[in-house]
Image (cartoon, rainbow, N blue to C red):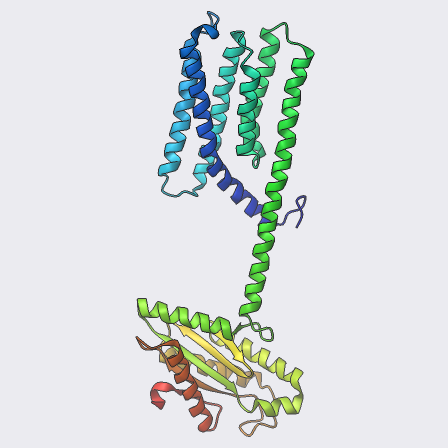
Amino acid sequence: MTTNAPCQAFDLLLAEMRGLALKTSSVWFLWVNILFALFILGRTYFSPDSLPVASHLPSAVMESVMAIVLFIASAGLFIQRLAPIQNAPWLSKLAQAAVLTQSLCWSACFYVLIASDDLKIVFPFAAVLLFSALISLYFNPHVLLSFIAPIWLTIFITSMAYNANITVLYSLLWVLLAGLIESGRRMLNNWFILALQTQQKNADLISQLELLANRDPLTGIANRRAFELRLEEEVARHQREGGDLALIMLDVDHFKIYNDSFGHQTGDRCLATLAQCLARASLHATGIPARPGGEEFVVLLPRSNETQAIEVAKAIAEDLRQLNIEHPGSPVLPRVTVSQGIASWRPGMAPRTLIAHADAALYQAKQQGRNCFVTWSRHD
């Protein structure tokens, strides 16, 4: 996965994280706008002589614009605080609208300052404000540009229009500021994407490790670890919510003879075929087939009673009959067959007890000549 050609999954992650980051960082950025607006209002109120305003641009314009900044920022913080769903997409759109509106207000503020010939505060104040935006919005270039561009253009054009003494060095200073902001944005955004790529790679690696830890490498179905964990989860869930739960334990009849006759590779293919058979037979019952080890298999059947478990057992036997995998050395039939033990869960029963009941029923099926199923309730 590279920055230039990200996969679709990474694109989705990037869009999601940009929206989440915008919602989170906009809180800090709105507070910055509140503090800066209070500074401008305080400067105007406590030092009126330091801010001479032309007659056609009364100080009321500045106060009105700063009041709008305070209102929008405060409203944005209030709405985000009380939003019922903190990750709602509309919050990101609200943050984008607030950022653009704040930019237009600050553009008007700087226009008043420049038109009033108060240039001393413009560059340092604008630089701090723009770099604050960079820190908050670097991960979303469109939102960042929507804030910076109106302010930068307003200052640059207004300075040229209202001040004939503007030097080339002053103009270059603003161009340099724009270059610093863009280079900083690129650097921070690269770090942001690199961090997300690392996170995605780690998540993919964890998923692969979990898959390897929970899947039988030969058959592709759940292994003993995954089966035991799922069994504990289902027992706990059924203990809380009630309902039926059944377990089928299977064993390939005389599999050692099959291995000795055809070799271990053919034996492995036989086990893989049987696993597919279990998956097909238990699909309608949302069963979970697993291979604890060797030629032993289990099928966990949540929300299934004994009658439904018997239907699954019959479907397994019928599927195997149709597959007709030859097993000439078997004393039962000249094809592969299985013995099955069925046990049903009862309230208060521990997972180990359910396994023990299914195992006992399987043992009884073998005692009865194999190629059959026995239920624990009937055996008991």
